[in-house]
Structure formats: structure tokens, C-alpha cells
Length: 309
Ligand SMILES: Nc1ncnc2c1ncn2[C@@H]1O[C@H](COP(=O)(O)OP(=O)(O)O)[C@@H](O)[C@H]1O
Ligand SMILES: [Mg+2]
Image (cartoon, rainbow, N blue to C red; front, side):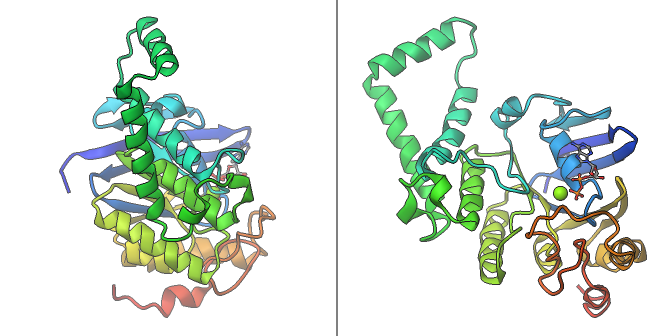
């Protein structure tokens, strides 16, 4: 892990009317680091990720990637410079096939690598697309080969469905496609918002294995996840949020055992769910034990897990 963080977010703030969803949050991630963000529903996790990845515009704060200011950069530009993300409720191009969804990621990366000379570059692109010289055909074939390889990361889940439109896939498979598309960007940083939401136990285990594989490749990963076992096993560092603020940060076991974190979760579950649940059937499965109105782990999950790593 290098000394300089890849990504630094400082003083990030986002208000929605009277609610400060994200309040002066600082975050940094080093190359090859795995940072998880946890916290009860409504803590501000997704909003924070939206701000970092350009899906939403912040009221205050700055974000840098490799020292370059990328505050409020448009999301497609973020993708081009290697900030890749998946969404809490999954987003794929439903009418495109599995292959084409992943090729979108490859094309975005290629576009970023090409000349950005105004007028000349787009005209050249059009000419190449019309004439399709051998170099273009070779590049397309290379991209397809790479897309197939990425798709194969998911074993037999996606490869047999490679030419199927993604609307015809199961929810879990659509989420896998989303990750495959993000990987096709060759991201500097991979941002995953609840990648196992809505997945059953075996699908979750399978996804955890895939994410562990990505970590083992040395990728830099930012994860929001409610399944604490997974967070404990994968993370180098954990940050806990509540009411838009960071309430704890450190080694996974330190954060898990931090009374402020336990209280944040318990507070939300014992007062009848705290913030209203979204109605999403995926939510409330915190650690796969109890479905509560919010996504709080039950108390025992913290205490019985013990103070050891
Ligand atoms: N687009 C929005 N408009 C208004 N309020 C929002 C919007 N997005 C999020 N919020 C509010 O911001 C708070 C944080 O939400 P969110 O970031 O989704 O939390 P988390 O991902 O931790 O569950 C919540 O109170 C939520 O209702
Ligand atoms: Mg969220």
C-alpha cells in the first residue's frame, strides 16, 4: 500500500432541504486498500458514494483522485478516469445483452484513452466506424475477448447467458453484470454499493468470494455492505456513519466493538426501526439473521462476535 491515498474526500457535505444527509465527511483510500462503509439505513452512505462518484453534486467539500481535483466531475468523466461504481438497486442496460453491457465499460475506457482533439477526433471515430479498417476490427475482437474473460469471472452464471438481454436475467445475475461492466473500465477505484443486497445466503457467499478475488488482485475497493460477516472478512479498514457523520473508523474489529456503533444500530432498531424502511425487500437482512424494519444487526452479533479479530 502506498503512502499517498488514491482518493481523498474532504469536508463532504450534502443537504436535502432541512436534512444534512452527509455532514463534513472525510474519507481516504490508499492503493490496494479495501475500505468498507457501514451504518444504519439513512446514515448517508449511498449519498456519500453518489457525491464521490459524481452522481450527485455536493454543497461543500472536495474530492481528489491521484492528487487531481475531481470535485463534482460528471459521472461519465469519472468513469473515464477510472472511478467505477455499482448501485444499491442495480443498474444495467436492460435491452442490451450481457456482452454489450460489459462492452460499454470497455468502450468507455477506450474512448478515454483516445485523442481528445475537438472535431478531428470525433470525425476520425465516425470514419473508422464506417470504414471499419482491420485495426478497428482487431480492437473490437480484443475487447470482446476481454469482456468474455471478465464475464467468466462469474463462473457459469453469466457465460451461458452472454447473448441474452439483461432484462431476462435474475436479479442476482443483473448485479453480476453490473460488476462485470465496472471491471471493464479497469478502474483505479471500484465502488460497490451493497453488492449482495437481495441475494440469498449461497449467492452472497459466492459474491463474497468474487470480491475477495478482486481484493487479492490488489484492487482498490470502497464497499457499502450490511452483511457484517462479509465486512469483517474483507475489509482492511471500516468507517461507520450515522446521521450523515462518521462516528467510528479503524480496524474492522475496533469499529464493530465501538459502543458508538453498537448504539447507532441498536438505537435504530429498538425505536421501531428509526428511519422508515424503503420498502425494499432486500433491506433488513443485515447479517442474514433477523429482518427488522431497518438494517440493524442484532446486538449479539456485535458482542458475541467477541473482541478478537
Ligand atoms: N434525493 C434525495 N432527496 C431527499 N432526501 C434524500 C435524497 N437522497 C437521500 N436522501 C436522504 O438522505 C439521508 C441519507 O440517505 P442515504 O444516503 O440513502 O442513506 P444510506 O445509504 O446510508 O441508507 C436519508 O435521510 C435520505 O432520506
Ligand atoms: Mg444506501
